[in-house]
Image 1 (cartoon, rainbow, N blue to C red):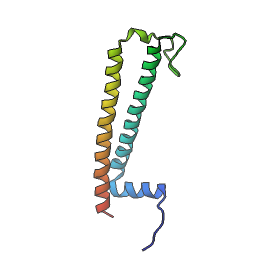
Image 2: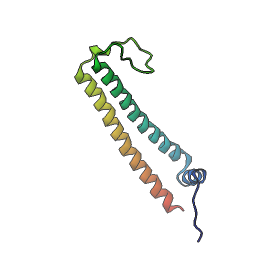
Image 3: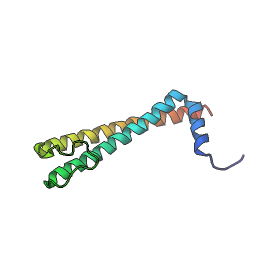
Length: 111
C-alpha cells in the first residue's frame, strides 16, 4: 500500500468517473444553489437593516434601485421574506447532503 495526498483535480476526476458527469455537475449545482440562497438571505438582511435604520443616507450597496424606498415594506414582510430565504436554504442543504451521501456511497462501492 502507498499513502499520500490526493489532489483536487484527481479527486474531481475520480468523483466524476465513479458517479458520472451528470450527477457530478448536479451535485455542484446543488452546492452553488444552496450558497446563492444563503447569500441572498444575507443580502436581504442588509436591505432590511438599512431600511430599518430609517436614515435616507443609508443606501443599499451595489443596489441598482438606489432610490427605492424600502420604508413602505412592513416589518412582517421583511421577516417573511427572510424566513423564505432561510427555509429554502435549509431545504437545499438537506437535498445537497442527501445527494452527496448517495453519490459518495455509490462511488465508494465502485472503487
